[in-house]
Image (cartoon, rainbow, N blue to C red; front, side):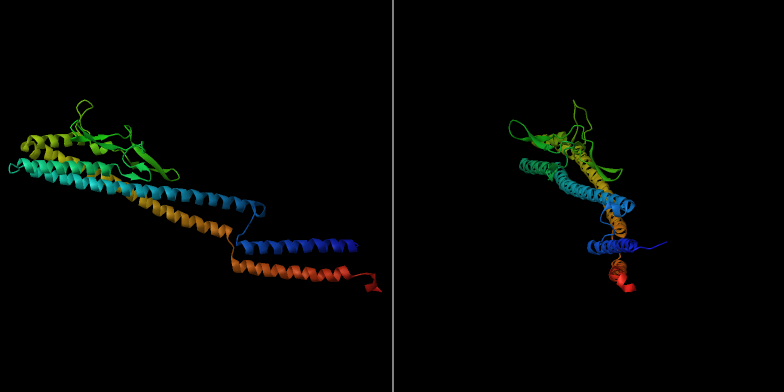
Length: 308
């Protein structure tokens, strides 16, 4: 086979271009510290990297949801802690008022303090978190509780204005995993009666205030004292359930953080480069490229005069 100058030049230029492209590839990798910069470099690897980036993005969204849910639960527990304190104080005042040693002035003072505790409870139950009421069910923009007063301006109980079909607020904290956030304020009322004859926290307050007005120590020291314990226990049970939700969210947050670490590590392994290894490869390729250039000066300068 006869090798012509044209063939020599052609193969030289092709090899020079190949070596230059390889050197440029390693240079780009060293500059960006990434294995590939476009999908054409390695379509399969790019597909895996994009999937990992999508998973990391979803993980970050879940992390934000979990953080919000944890703060929501903490706010609820803090509010119910205040409610528990108020109910315990009301119980103490009922117990104190149920003795025959209490006069009219003492009963009036106790009533005034109970009214103050009821109003404080309502304030706690109307706690707002990030623009949403925590005990209004699905109607998070509606103030859930209000103090009910008669025409004379005296407190007679409380009223719930939240969602009638409250249920819970669902929060997706991982793919296919959701946690129900307790938000039904009606559970605090602990209704045990009927629509026509209610028997709940509001009627309990009304009965207590009426008994204080009438000086009914027997009722105060009997059924009303027992109901005070029942309603306090109901709030404590609700706090326990919220606490269980909080613990589950904390465990979910730990898994989310661990998953984020693992995803970032896998992405780094697939997308990142070994700097020392790449620099060595780049140096070797530059040697090959420079050798091609040196060879080119010899090939391209050859003429018929070299053979004369």
